[in-house]
Length: 363
Image 1 (cartoon, one colour):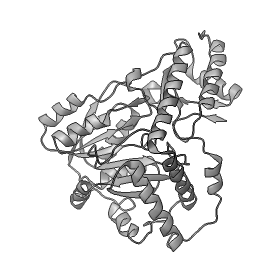
Image 2 (cartoon, rainbow, N blue to C red):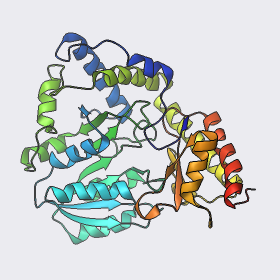
Image 3 (tube, one colour):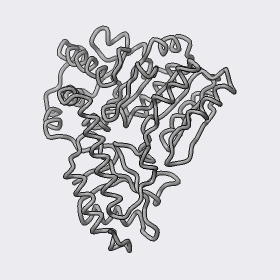
Image 4 (cartoon, rainbow, N blue to C red):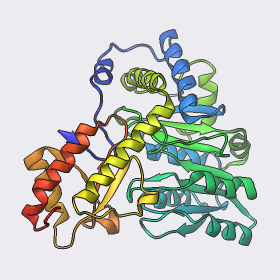
């Protein structure tokens, strides 16, 4: 199967094999060595010297951890959204009692830093800015450096970042850009199965944590800090995925993060050009299109569900459809992590064969 969803992603054979190792004591010296080594390597990928913790859970778990560890009920925050996952960040904050000002931008576009600047000028009580770096629901990458430059550089606000589908695939300079909390998850560019999430925590985030009053137990970063000093997780970890993570991090750093980013950029360019060569239209403007997932407009008169169904049934190609109001209007091709040009060409060839059956004449 050519699985081309924006997570989970296909895994290299050696990653899969690594997970078959025997269990070890997560309170013992072997796990301490593994956890400490992985944490140091994760910091390199996140480009940070801040604290970093591994959570057994999904990316959404880390998003919740970012919120509840830094905010209190009644805190005023700005949420920047360009799609479904940006909206999710706002929902989490609202459920825990934050007063959220939602700045939403048209689907297929990026955050306008000037709009953020205006909102911050209009409300001096804003404590934090929440933003998704790479929005897989629309295939768009925000200019996080510009957004953080306004939020932190001009207004000195707490900056909480959903980097779930960007870290390990796209450049994200956590410290240099002034990001206080950045989260990611294993099933994206990390070449791992679902089950682990990662969260960075700056000194500014720890200051916010000391004042934060949102309820937390499993996600209390103070527990993760305390246990990491002993080389342990606070709760039972996904040991098999930790084995795989150890190898995946070595592979990423051996390749070099600059090479990893260029590899993703190259695959992104190939995918977008192939889509245009078929006569299809990208959903976002190409200048803001993501290098981890390509969103494509479903042609007029074509049934998006039938398109995805035929690709799977006839070619063993699995793509993602649109979400929420984009359901049936776009399809998405994931190309993060372990992805080769040959796999993308296979997708393009399958589209060239299936689309005419649904009434669209490819070029």
